[in-house]
Image (tube, rainbow, N blue to C red; front, side, top):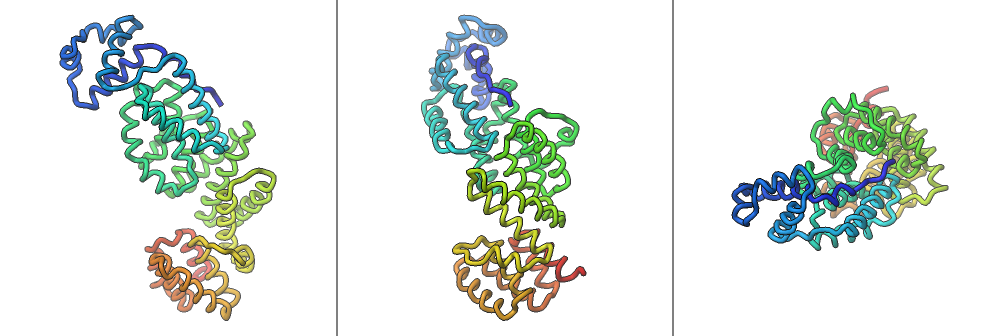
Length: 375
């Protein structure tokens, strides 16, 4: 893994390029605007191509006009340290200092730093690695990404690589060129595996996840591998390869005992293990894993109902009654629980179609089809 260098941003010509972008974003005619502030367009163009004293003077004047604070060499050095700390923490999925880093970036942005495109890039880089639903992360940060796209020419090579990792998550469709390129950065492959998984192209996701794992293993990046394994499990369960998902989830649960692992990894691994058990028709294990929990995720409730129905129909009725009571204020869950109950009792395709159109995980619907209609 490489270090991100911001040394080039000590040169004034980098900021003239940024100021051109700012003028364009504000719909200003560059030459007319410069002339209106007694700045020679010719001097601006010369300073854009080579480092000159006049370039520094132009930047100071335009920065004042646009209300941006010019960074000293010491400040650039401090921000370089900050972005490298963030990059390393995210790359190795340590994530002990999320709030600290986020606050530091916000403070710099509030101070109107002229390096705001770099700060916003790492703000989004942080947010994309929150332990939240992928769909929610993308929706909440779409506007920030749209703004970032305007400043790509300002980024040096190192920053463009970080931008590439970010951009992949916001692409609707992944261009074929990603299949042909080779990267040394495991996080690019991780991002591709994650995006293809999100797009339900599970075979492509497995392809990139395998490439990411090879790089992370060489780097001893075990925490990132734990998160990568969640993508593998999701792919395997979605493709109906429940045995592979079971093997990986079981091994991961054993491995994470020796690491300071977040509850998110452990709970998500268990969820994939539960789905694998359902796919393998090992209903007793599902019940065992989900017994005596105080709080249940929606998928856990549905899984427990299915498993209980298959092994203990008398006990199932009491569980179903409890599920109705506990979810009476959650309209979406209540509908699925009632529809699932109708399906389990009737084993009909009409209720199965209703479940397909609901918010129930697609993996569970596939398991219901397999376990009830395919022998």
